[in-house]
Image (cartoon, rainbow, N blue to C red; front, side):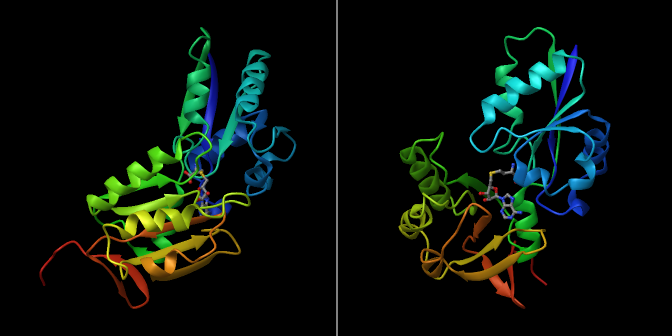
Length: 242
Ligand code: SAH
């Protein structure tokens, strides 16, 4: 069996990569990933064959991984955060379905939701839903349906991919849907570049959230009915009495 590693390198600085992910990347000969992510771990990739197929080059990345692995190389395919959460792990497994000799091992990482929640406070203390606003692979109607269901269920909602250079309206549209079922003063927060050098974060209300500019380096958290600001942090209370 040929093994290919789908490695999550965490949200940013090298301090947030797990020791296991670090060891596997160090042991591999070929590292495949998007340059922006590989730049986060320069020490780990120097001297190795690095393959970047650019953004939207996900299927090409998997094909390259299979080719290199079949040549006998130890291959790691890198995702930011966790490789299984909007990452490369599922596509690698899907594309390996018809390969008889390739096995994919997933190496977990700290996903953006966790990194962002820690910076904002403790907003994910109760049930939460994660929704990506990218309609590249998921139709917008499906995204709308999921947002509506999450709002009806009073989940804390974590929004990945809230915007991009070309997709500037998604967060505003998402907020419109959430505002159908949630109070405009619902407490929210957003983080850009979590756990990287130039991190920025801010708390706001759901009403204010619809007007912010969110790009592809941002993750948003929308609180539930029990989410409050405590000493400048976003906290979802759980109903303890003290
Ligand atoms: N596999 C990744 C998610 C990739 S989808 C993970 O598990 O985190 C890309 C989205 O992740 C971005 O649009 C953004 O919403 C979020 N993201 C990734 N890294 C981030 C960071 N350091 N700070 C804030 N958001 C981040």
